[in-house]
Length: 581
Image (cartoon, rainbow, N blue to C red):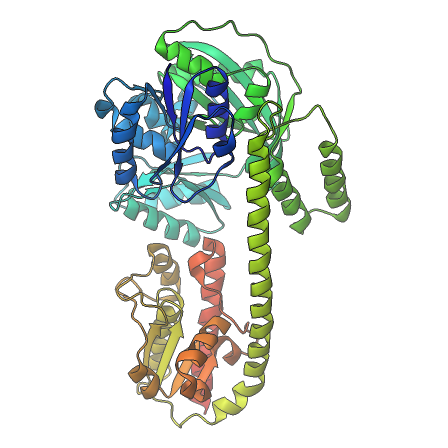
């Protein structure tokens, strides 16, 4: 019996592949990253489940796992892009094991929006207005690129491909929205540091559409297409409800593209259809896809025909599939889609009620198929429901804890607001030493240190000494490059900064301690309670600023820029107040 090892069983594509090949009588072993639970573990079509290293966080360990485990099986089917990269690197070490993956040359396009978009344009496919920022080589000077971005106009989407770090982490590609040249340059300088391949595109309104093809020896064996009806979030993303369709023109264009790059294997060619119906090419995904269940429900069995064609086995005749077949991902997909609609300030109340009613109606529509719930294999749906319920319970419990903490923080902030003026009046005259603290001394406090130091010198307060530190043991960590670039607009240079942990001596020496948020206050109250009377939230020293300065580290580039602007205003207000005493 042919034995197949499928990676990434936690993904929907892994579940779909296991059901397809297990139902066909193959011996299916599924690998799942250590510590994860997944619906595929309870599928009747899975003979064995094994643990693997995570291919995204530890490529070397995962490659070693493949070399050791794959040779025990007849076929290796990697599912995620990280697993495909690892398997491709191990091609020559797999012995007689058949690898179901595109060639290295084809992967150059299917793993890269940069090269795929160039190929799409070369065969006449329409794409969003695009600037090709960097392929294998980055320009030595970004000035010309920035001029091209200016000509394209803002806002823009900066899209970078996956890349492998020296530590062995395979970083997933991201799409980030920028609304100014400053934000764009900050992101690009950081991506240049990592050597990522990058394009910039104008956003495209509309909805997603996918064309799915199986090619072998230069011939197309299977064709399928769908349109996304619901996405997560509702403004655009992964599909939670999609519908089969026939789009001969889009199928022909996709087939032309895959033929031009010599692609063999399975691929999804992804488009964005504008409100007028014009398809805009987005990317090639040279792997099994998350919405695979729809094709399987439509009797278009990509994994099975792919395996049989590669093994040289007889390939069954392919029947046409029906239009209008719908497939849902209820947990968490549809609930997440609905939540994004209900949370949106841009959707009117009537639209929210319509979306809510639509979800109720869809739940009673027996013609709709499901990603997890298959009538001949129901247990994965039960497992998914259990995992989802556990996750929701954990989040609700965490929300209760956060709610209690927010209430406590609100009390702390209110007390700080009441006490700030009196406490400020009791500071020594003049204040000679200022200590700025934040959580990690990576983003906020070093910026405030440099800004306060410069402002004090410009105002003739040369005797003021300013330093910064953090509450965490992040000694030696650098400020991320995107923030180094972002704060240059404030004439602050953080390129040489290295984080350090606050010491008791610094606390004792300081005449005035400045913090960023309630979390910092809690940390100081816990570790240095004797210093409370000389401690201030820097935001409260500005007449119109917020009490807390958000941590840029976890924010989008646009929100990070806004956070630094608030902090700059608070720093200026602090210096003015110290000078006026």
